[in-house]
Length: 322
Image (cartoon, rainbow, N blue to C red; front, side, top):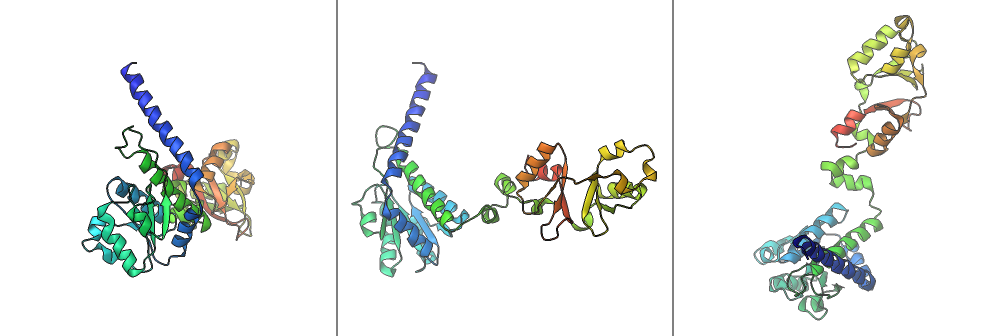
């Protein structure tokens, strides 16, 4: 076996072992999982996640996932908890303590604090007879299936199962709360994720930025409006303010002969492609790509037919879409 083959064989074995363990975990979930979800959902405070070592690293991620999906949560380091951070835990909170062995000594003071003040405690461990699990109000048990290193030393399978349990809790609570993409975006306004969850109204130009003329406007004034607003297009409205059509560079070329003797209504393309302000920006990109166009007028359903804004492909690209 070559060096490359050896590396790949080990990697595939690790992934296969962890995948198998996840299947066992899925089959082992029972009423205790629902009890934990109900306990968290019913809390008026926050979820306090704690753990030491690799469990602590996983705990950080679980707390972050809960917080970003509508369940207020934060991570408290158990050692810091013993030196003042217990003051961050209130009687309205729920504590999620993580320890694969269930015997991490750093958790002792936190466990004692929850028992003393009647703070609900959820234990997450692979040892049902451990101190953590016997002290907990709800026990989330992960299967004890060794570790992917083959020696039971390196936290791999156990951390994967712990992370999956945390993800399952977060998503179950998210769905129960009917947490929607627009809610998710409120917690993720930046980066690629924020841009993917943007709505048309978040990116469109509106108000005085809109390039608009009436159907009877002469093409001389229409060209000036196109130039002033800088979008390379102009919307054409009927007397009631509804969008009748759009004029693009292509329309100008098709009507070049005697252009300045015509009106916007003569030159425009009728029934242009439009989109609603609450549509996802990714949907707008798909529409522009399919229609081979570079902008969309935005029509507000509350003012049927009237343009509320304009969105260009460049707006979407600047936001990280496309």
